[in-house]
Image 1 (tube, helix red, strand yellow):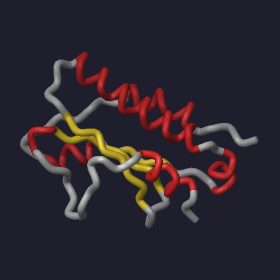
Image 2 (cartoon, helix red, strand yellow):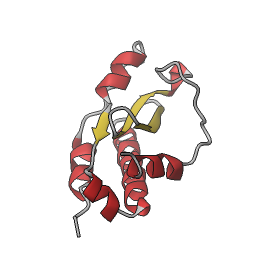
Image 3 (tube, helix red, strand yellow):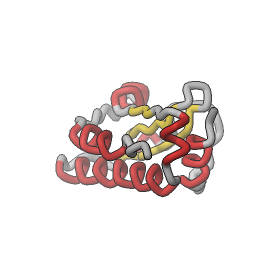
Length: 122
């Protein structure tokens, strides 16, 4: 069975600095962007809970970083980029009041649906 790559990725993400630039939502979004790709073999071997746990752990480590640095509130968002076949996430300052893209979002959307889309991506 193929090992989950998420175990290797989490420490790298947790150690990364968070860019806080309230005057530029684009700088924050790009500076805090992470993307992950897996092979079809890895996807077939992974249970959705592995990916969900990874995303939640990333959100928790990012939250701890912000608290430790006395930072202002930020929004963590995650999506499946179908064109790139990647799971992506980023952070922007909450004071912007919106996310840095033009498409509609479902703030109550289920992480499970993002994970399923990612794992079932061709």
